Image (cartoon, rainbow, N blue to C red):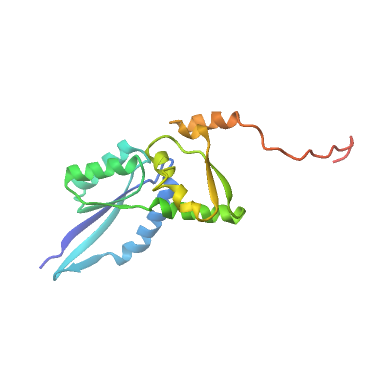
Amino acid sequence: MAPTPLCIRVVAPQTGRLAPLGAPLGHVLRALAPHLTHVRNGGRRYEVTVAVRDSRSEPGSARRAARELADEDGARIVLTMAGTRVLPAVTEACEEAAVPCVSTTFGLDDIARVFAGLWEGVSAGGAVGCLWNDDLQGRLLRHERYGFPPALAGRGHTLVDHPAGGTAAPADHLLALADLPAHPQQPRPRRARGTR
């Protein structure tokens, strides 16, 4: 009996603002590809092919990539990465094409623990300033029950969500930061003229 092809396709950011998040996935896929040449299930052998399409870090491109993988490549399953704008576009395209979609998703508590570890590397506990958009992701990050606050409360962190965090566009954050008072600095000693 001839092996049945099994096309596993991945939509991941290879370019655009999310590309640094897609790089590890690309590395793992390249490392696993030689070990995924075939699988057996129920006495049948499946020849496996894995390929990646670039989401370009934006929903329209991610949707097109998922549709191309389903329609042109014959994807039997599509893997993608979590993201508040790109993930819904990929999952909707997969649903329309009747192709299963699996996402790599971390819970906010996992992400909060990672950030807490980073903060604790600088200083134990204390206030941490946050600047989150007022979109779905920002609302989830600041959510009192499911976001960062409950995950960090037991570690001695107090989150201070700057009022600029309520803006919708990241560029607005920069404008709000420009209006903040400068961090108090120690006066620098004056040097005598002619010295370095």
